[in-house]
Image (cartoon, rainbow, N blue to C red; front, side):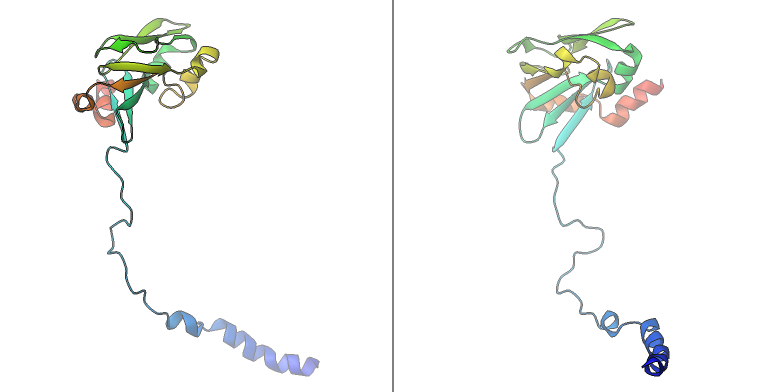
Length: 170
């Protein structure tokens, strides 16, 4: 039996070293997308995030006129440790540049201004118990208010991320 295994071993190692026949005879798929295209679509308004020069952001929820408002990473870092957040009253009507809340830190206090006109739907209840959420995630879980935007087209007048970052470099 051992002599048979010794005689087959050289043939087996040569067969394993060669390319398998299946890889050279692969059938081409019936249809292919041209290179550089995607097979899915994504709306440019899926999540529109805009910024103000006073360091607030607003993010429109896909397919609606509802948006979240908060302070930017830069503002949160400048304020230091946030100790208290004043949330807006539900149904409060705000105009662009009007206070929608306030943030108090160990260094200072600052109003949070609404970037656009609208009506407050709710405040972020997480901030009532844990104001430091703003320090951990100012442009995510640390949002301050959710509003119903009066005119979605007003977001066009705000800064995109690149333009906002340019204001920080000055």
